[in-house]
Amino acid sequence: MKVRNPWAVALLPIITLGIYHLVWWYRINRELRDYGAAKGIDLGQNPTNSLLALFPGALIIVPALITYYNGFERVQKATESASREMPNGWIGLILYLLLAPALWAYMQVSLNQVWETEAQAGAGAG
Image: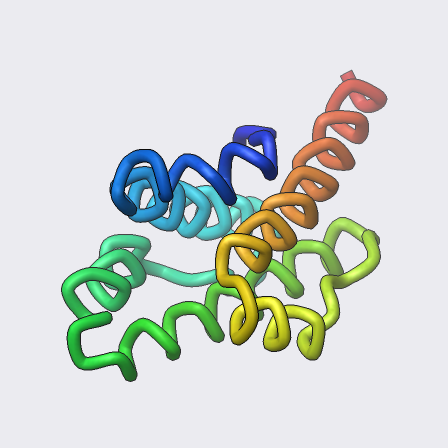
């Protein structure tokens, strides 16, 4: 699991013409899947499907909307399992509608909190 800079998550897709966003989306879904398996909760099974729903699925719009919804829900479950404050779904929706890169940064901040909590728990146990 990797702590990423939320500014990079929001701005690098603009510079890389969206390639970084696809890589980021696959990686966070893979990290969530692995984290869920370790915790015994379902946080997704196939990160490749999440990526394909985003591209080329965005060409027909609906798969991309579904993968963002499911991805945000997975982030909420992960933060809940780490006993952190869950990201607000309404804020997520507003960010998505107004400025999608802000949603990506919002999701990454929540994931960073989960990974830092887990790192501290691991360091305390070891």
